[in-house]
Amino acid sequence: MVGPNYLVEAFKLKGNLIFVGAGVAAGAILASPTILLGVAGVEAFYLVGMVTNPRFRRVIRSRR
Image (cartoon, rainbow, N blue to C red; front, side):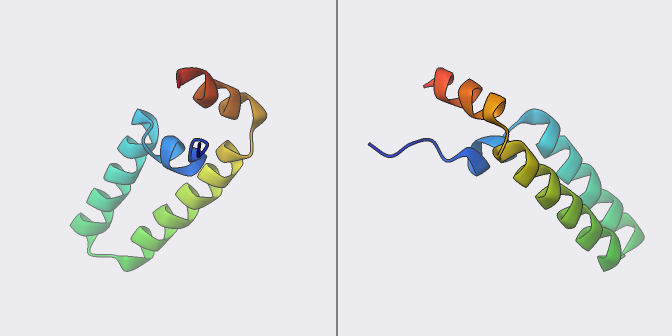
């Protein structure tokens, strides 16, 4: 059995999706690729931190 993919689970959380959506909307409105890259960088940094957190891993394992 394959274990849960923690990165996918972290990305699907409501707060993360709202943050990504807001960043994409701001980048589109301001037509600034810099904002889009900044949002992507911050989100990647946050997701890596979240995925390596043992508490987050326990929550995801308990859902299945």
